[in-house]
Image 1 (cartoon, rainbow, N blue to C red):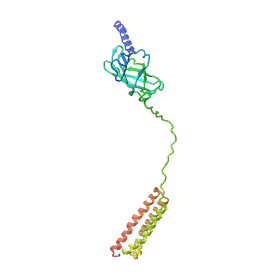
Image 2: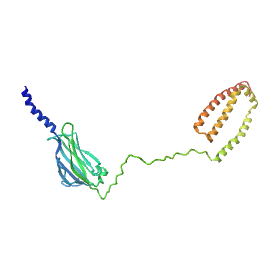
Image 3: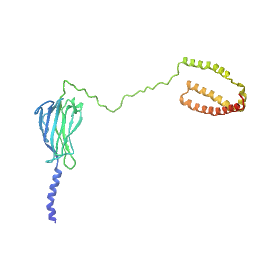
Length: 288
């Protein structure tokens, strides 16, 4: 039994070393740059090696299409990885962007890039962009990531691109001085005097109409004798309300006016109800 266990040990170690030594990579990889309208065989085409990058940068014109075709492998077996993307990086600014490869179950994948797919900052850079290919998946296999080529975008001189706007940076900003709306002002004095004169002029007219309709001031002593407090409070509350409105017009604000108006208004309501009850009693008694 012990001999059988020892015999299985080398096989187990060999299996573990194979699992630990597995890694991702690719083969049968080609890169091509096809100008728009070019026929078969036109443009640039070369093979990509997982061990070393291309010796010279690739140019990508305004109407060109860059295409990469490869077969992803785990060790020597074609397989679809969980992640496969091409990363472009501007070495002068550190700006990066990635393009995912479309990979089938057989491991064959491809990606196509045009100038329209590049950020505006990449089109105005003075240095070639560094292209890195990454292939990885779940498990213990070592992922593949390596620099495979450099690319230089070539702009169309007939159609210059607009310079990208400066990126927004959060930080201290200049102090903002708020300008609040000025307090409302009273109307012109001439208008105030005009309407005041109109109100005063209406008082004699009001008294004349009152006399014409048969107002009887001889009942005033009787009213004050029957309910002196309600009549005096009601008349005083009406005068007080006029005074409150005058103060609001001249000096008070709304928060000072509302509480005082609420108190005086409550007094006017209660005393006015009692005063009108007294007037009704005299009318029912036949006093007009």
